[in-house]
Amino acid sequence: VTINRYVRSQFAAALAVAAERTGLTVVTAKDHPLHQRLRKEIRWRWDTDTREWKFEGSFPYLAGLYRGLLCTVRVPSGVDFDWKGPEATRVAVHHKAKPTGFTVYARAGAPQLPPHRKVTPTGDAAFDAKFVVLGRDEAEIAAVLAEPVRRALDALQTTGIRGIELNPAGLSLYEPGKVCNAERVVHVLDVLTAMTAAYVEYQQGRSAG
Figure (cartoon, rainbow, N blue to C red):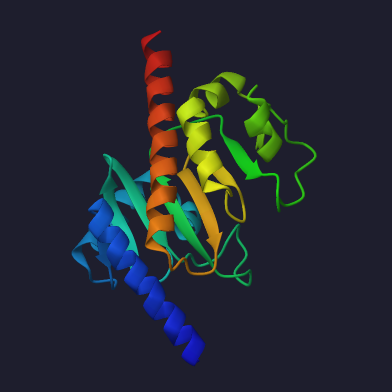
């Protein structure tokens, strides 16, 4: 119990520092005004299951706009529909879009890769030696994983316990346990917002074309 209390206090402290660095807000309870606004906004974006697994979770958590994008940092109810799985911290950029989608795994410590998913190399030998990308839309992958993003991912060194996933709910990364390092939180947010911005630019280019 003492250890859990200590970890919770360290996690809350990390969120507070990350909030100062990013301009995000620490949401402490269900009646927090920002939480109420977010729930209303999320309600029209996603179905009930998606809201439950991609947004909901425990308090406190970080939320708000970072680099013009809606972001949250939260301990979720579970990971991949697994209520009894190990605790994790979900760092997410939420957006309303319909990407083909892909997942980036760090090769070191990566889970067993689904056999039905296509592996798409980026063409960057150094990056491809450290990471594996699963997805079928090569143009989308090339646009989002441009060289600056690849450098940022390399500096991040890992993609969390489930990889960095781009899907209609946004971009998300799950770190093991409660992340008690504010620098890590900010770094992950930087990577995910850069990837999201690259995706938005790619989609706008396709629409204009």
